[in-house]
Length: 105
Image 1 (cartoon, rainbow, N blue to C red):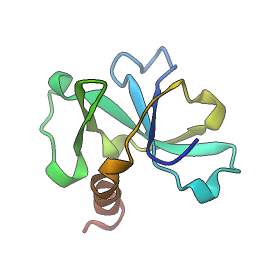
Image 2 (cartoon, rainbow, N blue to C red; image 1 turned 90 degrees about the vertical axis):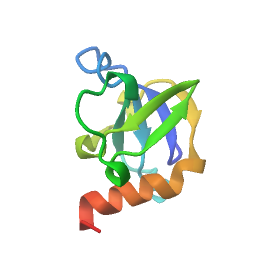
Image 3 (cartoon, helix red, strand yellow; image 1 turned 60 degrees about the horizontal axis):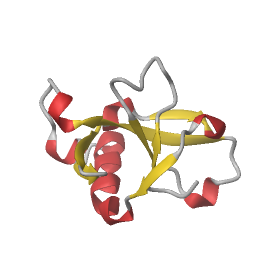
Image 4 (tube, rainbow, N blue to C red; image 1 turned 45 degrees about the vertical axis):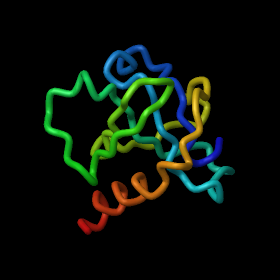
């Protein structure tokens, strides 16, 4: 599962709010049984304020999604749903969001 692939969220408890998951884990860690994902939420459904760099917006399948970086999580790789997109063109925005979350800069 390559870094920056977007997958459907198969978890019935959370897929209504976060229909997509963005794999942000380095391809160098592909041998691990887990992966780090950031949920993507339709931007139109957000009630909270989008925090620029921390929560970049990306377009996937014609819909705008916000990367909800503060909800970063590790999940078993086998729990990733079907791949729906590849978004390496958002790499700089994704890395900036993760950097801000972890380092504060």
